[in-house]
Amino acid sequence: NEEAARRFADRRADAQMSRDADVYVTPALAMLREGKRQEAAAVFQAIAQVFPDDPKAHNNWGFCLLIDEPAHALEELETAARLGFGDNSVNVGNRMFALWRLGRFTTALVLAEKHYETSCNRDPEGRAFMWSFAGEEPEVIEIGEVSLYVMELASLLSERADDSGLARVWAERVRQRS
Image (spheres, rainbow, N blue to C red):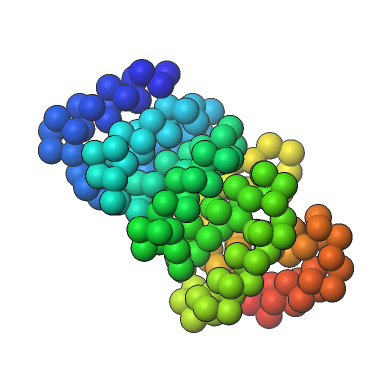
């Protein structure tokens, strides 16, 4: 439950809580896979409260909120972007996912295009955990190339926005990258 996650985070804080949010990813992923999304979010919320300038803590908190609270997730993800995570493909993919969940396809596609032009081809990121966008119920999956995930999500959003021209552009970008 959420209280257990808060106690976990509090114990870690009492024992010189690590500033590195990555330390908490493995236990949070286990919680997410068990459907305990609020508990996982509470872990990163506690870290973000102790270290409000930590972009990873805000990004991971937002990631945990994406399914149940996409508007709040977007706020945390945008905070992470303002704190220096803005060009990071993981953060861009997470913000696009939140915007998709909120029905803001055009905004997500503008973000994708900006990322493609400035960062996507220059610095493809390695492996990461992201929410799947295929299928009925999103699940946490490991992605081999996050930049490709961003392009595939943009392709899907172009189709959902009924923009066949843009859908073709993104499909071609995906094809060239794959």
